[in-house]
Amino acid sequence: FPGSKFYGCQFPRVSVQSCDFRYALFDGCLIPYSEMEYNLPSEPNLRQELTSTLAHASEMLGLTKEARNYRLESIKAQESHLWAAVRLANSWYQEHYPGARRWGALISLIASKINGLLWGYGERWSILLRNLILLTFVFFPALLWAFRGGLSIRGQSNVDVGDLVWLSIRTILPGATPSDVVAISNTTNAILTAEVFSGIVIAGLFVTFLFRSIVRR
Image 1 (cartoon, rainbow, N blue to C red):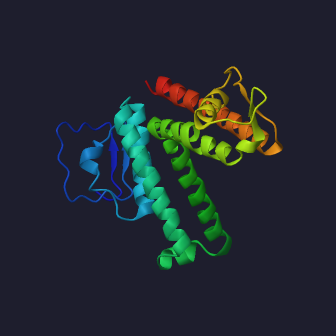
Image 2 (cartoon, rainbow, N blue to C red; image 1 turned 90 degrees about the vertical axis):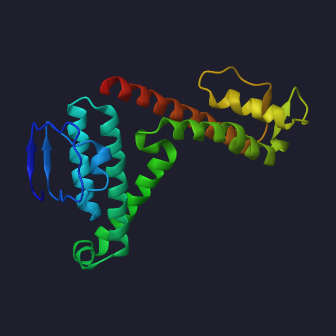
Image 3 (cartoon, rainbow, N blue to C red; image 1 turned 90 degrees about the horizontal axis):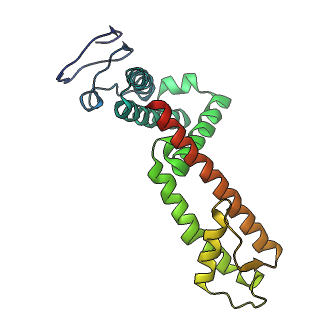
């Protein structure tokens, strides 16, 4: 079906095998992702375009799960496309991504990877929760332990690991009351400031998740 246009079609119990949907358009209809997964174009730029169209069609029909599957596939295809542009994988990329465009593709690829690493492209709340746990119970306590000489608890310097974990929890939660452990050096003050900022950003991202889920429903 290369270049075909589907308007308001219904596909009950459809089975799709070995089909070509390059440049196809779906308006007011879609094929379930489980059937399309192995029939998408092999070229990453064409796969990204098609899955983006299907994600939009799914959203318009109120099929949130299908839309999410197609969005994630679209992101994966876009990253493959950008990586091929960075590598100048074939003559087409060599022609269309000379000089500055190639560097632009690299920057876009890095930004996309960071987006996925931080909060799963806005589609996977579990990744954001995982990062919150790692920051709160591993990263910041370890960093504070390395500079524990710049911390004091009730006027003494004998803070232990439990104190640092509790300090990390109280710091990263927006609006939490201060801990008994206080920073007495510029380095530890900078670490705690970074953790406060991280907590605010993560809280904002969780609110974004909630807002998106409400709007999509």
